[in-house]
Structures are given as C-alpha cells and as structure tokens.
Amino acid sequence: MKIVYYRLALFAALLSAPFHAGAQDIYTVGFAQDTMGNDWRVAQVREVEEGFKDKENIRFFYTNGKSNTAMQVMNIEDMIRANVDVIISSPRDAKVMTPVIEKAYDKGIPVVLLSRTIESDKYTTFIHPKNTLIAKQAADFIAEKLGGKGKVFVLQHTPTSTPGIRRTEGFFEQIKKYPGVKVVDMKVANSLRSEAIIQTEKAIKEGLEFDAIYAQSDSMAIGAILALKQNGIDPKDIVITGIDYISEARELIKAGELDASYVYPTGGKEGVEATMKILAGKSVPKEIIIQSTQVTKENVDSVTPIF
Image (tube, rainbow, N blue to C red; front, side, top):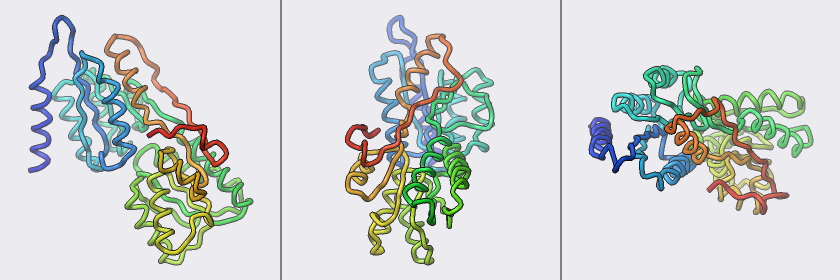
C-alpha cells in the first residue's frame, strides 16, 4: 500500500502544477534517485534541486528508490507514462536498469545519468568522475603506505552499480602490480555507514588480519573507523582510504585516522547545466568527465569537501 500511495502521490504532483507561466513553457524534470538513505545521494539530489531553484520554467521533483532496484525502475516507468521532459537518474543496477532507460530514450525523453551509467549507449549524457582512475590511485597509495607489503580489507560500494564495478576492477587490476600486497577479503557494504560497521566488526570477529582498508566511499570508511574503535583497534595503525571527500572525511584526515580520500563531486551542478542546454535545443557531450583530487594530510587544508 505504501508503494501504491507513493506512486499516486507522484502523479498527483505532476498533474497539479500549471503547464505555462505567462508566455514561457514549463518543463518537468524528474530525478529517479537510488536512495535518500545515503548522505552523498541526498547531497546529489539537493544540488540538482538547488540548481533548478531559480529556473522559473522548471518543475522539478525527485523519487526515492529506497535502495531497491525494482522501485527505481517503477519510478522511471511512472516518469515515462507522465511524459516528463527530462529524466535524471543514477542507476542502482547497470544491467537491470538498462531496458527502462532505453525505453525512455527511445520514446524521445532525454536521459541525464549522474555518476552511474547502464549497459547501453541509449542515454543523452553521462556525467561522472573516473572511477577506475580513482581506484588505481587508491591502490598505489595503499601499496606505498604499506611499503609494498601487507594485507588489504575491501569494503565494496553497491556491486551492481558502475562505480561499484569500476572501483573494484580498477583497484584489483592495479594492486596486482605489488606482489607483496594481498587483498584478504572484500565485503559489500553498499556505501552505508551502518553496513560498514557490521561488515568490519564481522571481519574482526572472524579473526581477519589486515593492515589496510580500501573503503569505496567515505561513509564506509567512517563506519570502518567506528568499528575499529569499538573493538579496541586504533585506526591510526591501519592504512584507510575512502572516496567522496565529505566534511567528516576531512576531519578524520586531520586527526590522522583516515589516510586519504578522493574528491567525488555529485555532478548535480553539471546535470542541471546539461538539462538546461537540452531543453534549449542545444547539443551536449555524450560523456562529461568531472575532475577528482586525491586528498591527504598534505593538502587537506586547501581542498574543500563536496559537502
């Protein structure tokens, strides 16, 4: 009943707003987000929302897939039936969500993908930092900090998403260049702090020995640090890296409990810019790369967190 009510509420929101404001056409833009239970995902939606705030001809709304691929697919189906003018999304599952994204694209609805893509080129533009490059940089950093010898525990981002796939493949590919560094275990924590706490505590209780933690998001790195402390382990004794570079990561780097993070902008601002160009009939690149920066204690004071 909750899902039905939620979807009816979505249609009500779409149909209740006026279609014209004076002589200016009103465009409807829907953002089908994976989840609003993750601070980075919330920040991504808020950045898009803020970008449209001063656009009087944009009627913006978002949906919450609640970390459920089927629900995110249904939300996009609703947007297609409502004939929105642009769909923005960050697909939770690259494979499963390919058909519904293709369906929207084939119906002539422009699709802007933020941070995650699909197994097809049937979308309008894909905006993202380079996950594979970030993963390789993290592997090099950890190997160097370990002096070329040690054991690494990996906390994985959502494994069905393209960042989860590329942050894993890139790291494993690069770490092979260091024969003395071994990945001893990898547990899925879906970029959630709570799951990272659970998975790290599980690893500790299983007797897993590790010298470093490669957390594929800052939320997971923070969860791992909390779990280490709860189990009497000083995070400063473990090499720990995260990805995103949020404010909490900055403070942890300053405190010496997190060794590095990698700036991973949400792409919200760029998504708004691309959407406005599309609605104005202008062309946009198929791929828009956002730059990332490695942040350590050496440059932590000069790099601004993404939120």
